Length: 463
Image 1 (cartoon, one colour):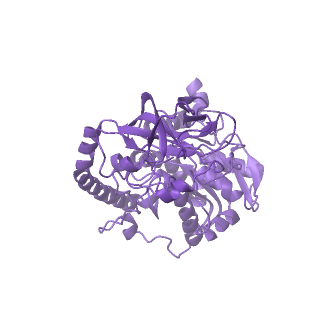
Image 2: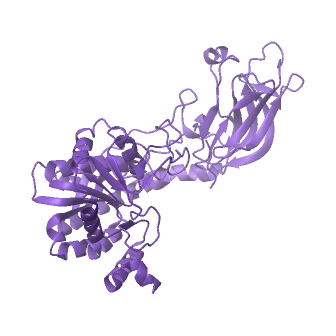
Image 3: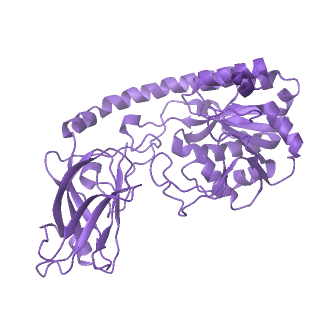
């Protein structure tokens, strides 16, 4: 799938305000039925016994199998261990509510925003951008506009255009308009306008045809402009048609049925989670809609829960697809004397470039690189940092991922960072590893079986 740069085409994607508004629907209302969070008091005001380490395992609502594998491997081992059982508290962190928008009807699979397509115009060309009389009269060559857009349903671009006031009868200079794929330097299309070749004017824009090209769903692109003489000016637009319009209409007509089925599945999921929580007592439901984009908010809510319910020294964060060796973690804590305040122990990524497209698309953080952040497979922070995060959770801005969000938050307080490559960032096996990510349930079970039979899963696998 190609990734492109972010506009919403008004005729395909609903009304757009100016050229830059990103369509989004209001957050889905909570279901009237009681979900897991209604049976579990969020952030109860009580204190348990003291724990050396609280382990928060970020988990998706439907990852029952991964949680059960953890319960039968490293979590079971810690609960049965004569020393660890009294020193560690492990909790799965799950969003209290599922997204009420079916995945097929979302802008992207990582959020809970409705793909807001209304009244599609089929079998005819459509202008991606239009200018009111008031707006177009204010355009001048000393205003620079690079139009970025995002395609939420496949379209076919037929013409490129330029905003240019040629009311005096034609162009006074040469202008080139290009369409770029978001992450590429080479332009996909080029349209050149000149005094002898102005193209066709439609509603204050001038257009020239290009070889037809399909921009896929979730595609992103940019239409910068450049004057041949190097002067700056106003960027271009494009004309398109809707690809597979009949399929789009069929999809829209089936939305009501799909929504009813999805709500029914959410109710079943709520019931399963309620039963799982009652059976194991190791789930913390935090008050967020459980989607990838909300993982940073899940983390902050868990910090609040930990501070308000538990007496502890350290907090270990990991994910439900990760191998964790808690005995090795405790041995290393003792070896490194990690018992002071204001410290962060993990495997840190430095000078990590901000991604503007795809799953890790960052639209909020303005810098080209992130501050140092620890790999999400596992890291440990001191109690005072958890308290700071919890007390400021209502003011901390969340970004595209919890790992980079932690890096940005931590940049504000500058904790002591302890670099340790045994918190693995990629799915691999190294002797003495503390964590390793991205495993399936079967792979996690196999890795733990190797550890129990040979002491070290990597060395056992090698033999």
